[in-house]
Amino acid sequence: MTSNSALQSRRVAAVPRGVSTMLPVFAAKAENAEIWDVEGRRYIDFASGIAVVGTGHRHPKVVAAVQKQMDAFSHVCVQVTPYESYIALAEKLNERMPGPGPKKTIFLTTGAEAVENAVKIARAATGRPGIVSFAGAFHGRTMMTMALTGKVSPYKIGFAPLPGDVYHVPFPDPYHGITNEQSLAALKTLFKADIDPARVAAIIIEPVQGEGGFNPAPFDFLKSLRKICDENGILLIVDEIQTGFGRTGKLFAVEHSGVAPDLMTVAKSLGGGFPISGVIGKAELMDAPIPGGLGGTYAGSPLACAAGLAVLSVIEEEKLLARAMAIGETITGRFKKLATTNRFACIGDVRGLGAMTAVELVKDRSSREPAAELTKALVSKAAEAGLILLSCGVYGNVIRFLPPLTISDAVLNEGLDIIEKTLGDLASAG
Image 1 (cartoon, rainbow, N blue to C red):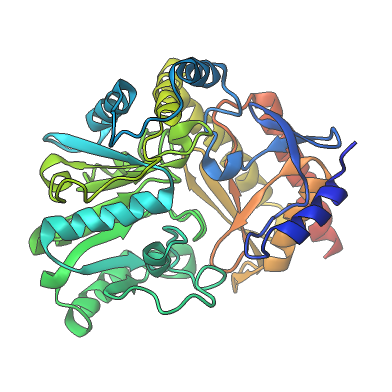
Image 2: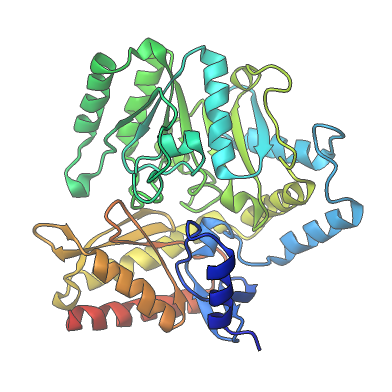
């Protein structure tokens, strides 16, 4: 039998160290919210492949749709001979993007590709070069998306110079003392000190920061950004790559705020495990690039489009938006209650939107000093107990919850029990 240790040795020899691996555990099988490794051990999956399998591993409807497409063809390239599923999926997303007026959608393969193309569209539509992003943001690992990402380590180390005309301002973060007003003042200063707003093509923001620590953007702040963009002819790009497709209790997280973006990037859970991303936007903006200016060989793969159509059906039929809210209430309710006890004084903050929830761990609640080592230990010990967890945050001290929205209550609570016991033991020993 193949072992995890044997595969890890082969991985180290064959794969560059830049491709980091959180756990030396090699998947052999997965079903809904559970994974089994090559040694037959079961794990509860609170990662979902980093928010990709929102409808669970191998959802029967997604599997059936992809198998049916495989019986027809796997690839022809939409730029050579197009196919109906690409159009059908675009039509459905155009209908669901917030805001009035006609919309259009382009499909790509990765989230970073979607962000790259959103920038291209914004620049083509406005004739302006500048892009404003936020500290703590994560938008990808390509050269442009690295520049947009608001976190140096590990994403930017050794890769400079990065593309220019990219600027960062603080993201509003009440727990760490950054108010809406301070963030908006920093944006105003940026427009006075570094770039004329008349040269800014777009402001890009995650409605809930992912890698940055699962920090929801305050709704009033998003409304203020919308107003600033409208006053200055700037486009508002909302990055829904991690937040989209039901994770927050709405199909798109920005819907909670009532704000309508100009362009929106999507990926991850759209494909149910198959690589697909996209840019959805106002039709007149999406049509700005000339023919041939957008595209990609594998962009909008027929297999992924078939999967995407199935995912949208599953979200509706299984009422996963309501389920996301219920999952979020279960998680936040559990940890807010634990936070009231002395044993769990390490819980500094419990936050989130819908099922996109997080717990921030601290050494001291008064100083709010990040407990990065405790967080790392929790991820490791939880895995030993059969639970896959992800951390995040600028200081590496946030546990983020990304279970499939199809997870059962029994499996969800089994996973939460593991965290409670493991964190309690570590805090007591610490």
